[in-house]
Amino acid sequence: MNSYIVAVPVLAYILVAVAAYLIGSIPTGFLVAKAKGIDIRNVGSGNIGATNAMRVLGKPAGIFVLLMDAAKGFFGVGLGYFISKAFGATDNQIETSRILAGIFAVLGHNYTCWLKFKGGKGIATTAGVYLALAPWAVLVGLVVFILAVLFTKYVSVGSIAAAIALPVTVWIMTPQNIFLGIVSTALGALAIYKHKSNIQRLMAGTENRLGKKASTTETTK
Image 1 (cartoon, rainbow, N blue to C red):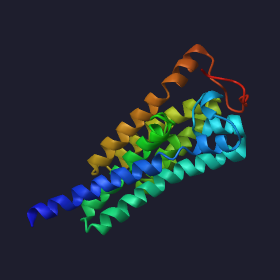
Image 2: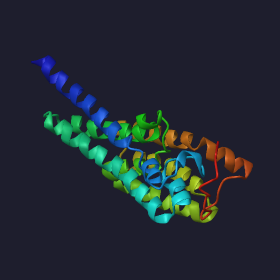
Image 3: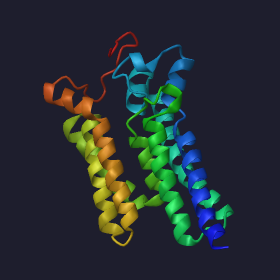
Image 4: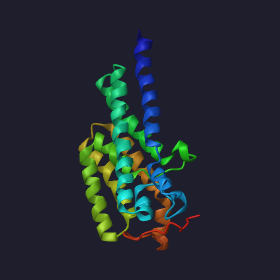
């Protein structure tokens, strides 16, 4: 009986991780660009996320990619809830499942199995995850993002600033949830790491400013 009680949440966690990863791994930006006959990995910044999609494909397509990438994170967390609930998990186990789902949804986006484990930077997907887990932290992160972009005209600076602000807000607003705080810090660090090429371009003065449209023939290779 005891082994059954232990096995149930473990199996639920495994299913949650796999399901959330697969949802997160859907390469929205790549698919939208491919439908227009463009391999987005070879134009603009080469990233499959919303910012490059907006520069290469235009605002409507970029906004669609942004919303879909965020939805992957949000619904990934929801799936974590329903799977663990179906297994009869406790409230604490359900919360752990939701956080675990958020982790793997972001990992799926950043390292999608459909594109040889190369993906986006995870900002929109992380926002979707925290819209489900800690919506106030997302609001703070969004305000920081907007202010940073307005002052610097660099989307990458706004993204990095938001990646710092979000985990700080989580720690301040939910200090009792140590696991969520640790995960938030790790995901923030991952988001900054995924912006390493942007940081290099910022230091070199070659980073694209907000509003600059990339040519569909411009290659990053």
